[in-house]
Image: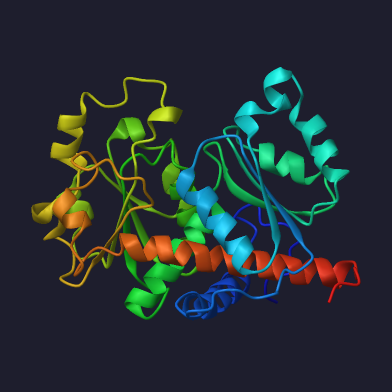
Length: 316
């Protein structure tokens, strides 16, 4: 079976068939978004509310654009200035929103599990746009689509994920998704930024970039998660770049056609050399941004279909 879920809260419970269905539909939306006319009535009559308790210009803009291109009524809630600041609980907010009868709720929250809790309290479909250190499912899906389009497949590749693994919901979602699709996953980073018992996820762990990048097909760099760090994890940014920042010399250990990825925003000269990030022959970072809109359109399209199937609403 494909994607039949009511919500998209994470990768963990998605089957390979569900992942493939989302990516196949997103592939069609990539072509759609390159047309002169970029508007459809797929979500006509649907209300989409974006609730971002953390700032994220890129992800919020991507979800907003995706909803508008699908024809939804899109509302962005300014949570930093909301009643949450006045003491209202997340559940209170959820119940108030539920009374407005939205159809799609896109939520980013700094606490792991908060989005799942909210999904239990509302009648609409909920999309997790990132919760704490837990998951960021649409980022993993857009990364997967980027890899599949660049490599022609999404299985039996050797993929290195490098950097701050411990604090990264992007890393967790990618490890889950890429593992489901039968890829060989290598994690590279300092011990202070590597989760305990991470090998239980079926990954290989390296502390040396040259060794970890040897003959890989994909190099996925991660942003240093300063806002989720407690401090003291790296001696200095300069030392971090020297050992774990991606440059031409370190990349030379990967396959000659290896692609370079980064979820953004980038800290140039810390996680990745700026020239390499802009190298059109190796970097697919801009493609990741493009794939983000298409993947989010596909996810909302499928959730809307599931809503219609579960509760016929009389929409055209």
